[in-house]
Image (spheres, one colour):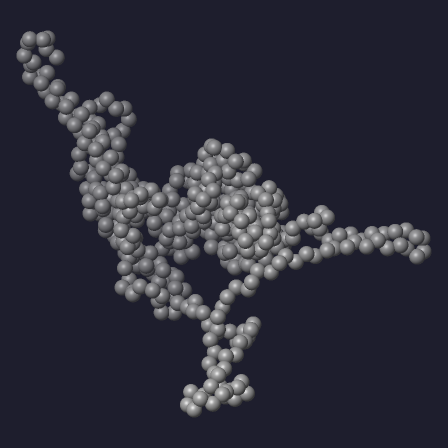
Length: 471
């Protein structure tokens, strides 16, 4: 700059203008990024619905393609209508007292027909059944030795609760996420059973200890499954953020707790469906399939905020490709090769249009050379690169119909774990968190297997592991 009192030269003015332009460009880029963040919500990003606050987006808008069907159950959908039973537990007869014609008295013997209506209701809670086990000691007639019988397995104390009470308590604690105090109140109100928090915790620990073999069996089956879904989420243990990982499919669910987010399962083969988290690509001997629900939300954000036309076209193409795969799956056939080739050509054409759009845009971020490294790319440009470089993983669901369009299976399985944290907060110790993950692996797998959870919680889990359905 020129000394004070001397007019600046042309070169000085140009330098000032260049510096101001660079600063304006940087500020505009920052404003655009902040506006983009403000425009993100649960419908166009991975943010949970709870983060939307009072400005919730219109929930009637869906990323699914409209098929023209009316709301409600579709043709062929099995109904859940309550129907009369042929063997009611109790029959109560109602008879008219007098004739509606002449007023003469009527009796039950005069009945000629009847109309029936049935009321389904819960039975009145019964008092606890107390079973006393007596181990008799018998004296031998030959030598006089007294021999006492053994108590049945599981009968270990002079007074204890039975296996069904423990099963119900574990079910309410880990399947329905009732906090211990509310669980104790419910057991007292409904069944007259007065449990303490320490007793409930002891039941949970005992259940988890019996499930280690079952958990290992599920882990091995999921790792070797032809297609499995994976996801991870933060998990508060002892006031610190740890990580909960899930690996699951239609029949099995395996949860595990880890101190590191990047600590992935070992000995995994087959196809892994995930959300493009880069550490998954370090897994050896696996193929990858990307979650297209994430892609649809990211494309929706580009359409809503950046107004990029190519994103809407890619959205429509992916939804139609999903529809094609669903139709083929319903008919028990494969997607025709010419259909796949057509979709892939359209896919590449839309990518080319998107890249042309971004190449025509001015440089993004600072341009004064003060920032080292490459210039930051726009969000849409980054998504285009992913869709181009991972096109095979993005469209794998077309060539292999066993691969789903989304990673919703893992997201549904892990959402229940987040619900538990929302209700009861984090865990105090590592052991309680791992016990919870193990029991939830059992309960989630049992529900997918069609088991009656209360009944199987009273059975030997090792025998159940031998009869798991995997297809």
